[in-house]
Length: 287
Image: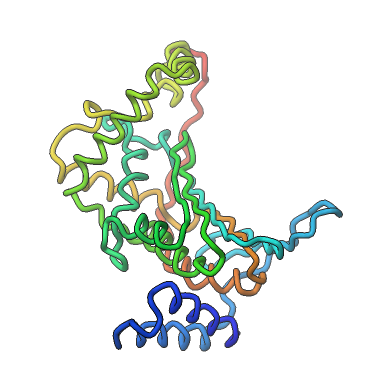
């Protein structure tokens, strides 16, 4: 455990400038090491996933104390690490009065957290280490993912976990993000698949979620920026809870290393409300 934590500190030390860091930064890294050294395992090991006999990767499934489930993948041959996080909430959870709210929440998540308040922090980090990141809002799920060089996994995971668990949702950026969403909508409006889905939406029951406009644009997400930011925060509080989160993380790190990283970064997610299961609505019934 101590060797693992020391390697994490060294990785972050390299990425952030080594001996040129100030005293506060050195103290911060030392605190990470001491916390890791004193912490025990916090995840329940789940039954081992079934894999092909020809698959040389090693796997482990864990459930954290807050019920986040994670699949860990040790790939000895990899030079990069990756993480994919799925939140069980998407455009189906949009309020009827705010189509596109889930999509806007996905955009706003990246724009600063309590731990890393710089709205460009994640993009700067990815540029520094040579990584990539993106996100996607679906009907019932929202996905967040990145690829980074293996040594950058600890610091990249820390940024993404903080963004998802404690985003700032600064109203200053509402206007720019709804303009970005409107641009996405206009770009997709001539897309054949998008137009097909629109046609399906017009054919099904208007009470079914498939009939909803899901992407959002300047009209559906218009209004006072402060009010929209508060709606985004409310959506996040309702749906971005630990019970709704699953993740996969892979890299050349050992399964123990990956597990400790996940435990360190994702135990901060809070449990959410026990929301009622939506009533079943017949897809084709018009009334």
